Length: 51
Image (tube, rainbow, N blue to C red; front, side, top):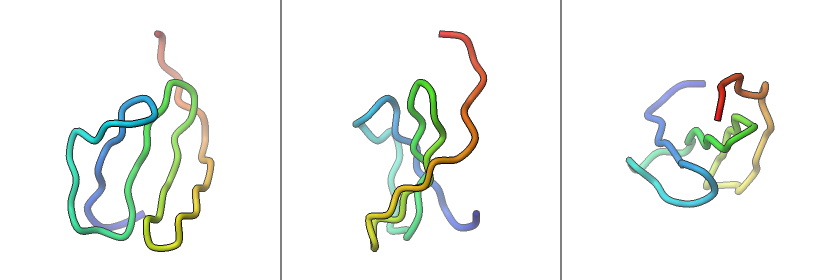
């Protein structure tokens, strides 16, 4: 992973955004790499944190 990443909290809202081709989505259970140009979502290793 490289470039400037932006964070999505829970399924929707961006806290930061930039003209990049990749972003990091954080949900309650998964870390997801998202590429807006192709709209592919790849599931990465699950996050380990308490809710």
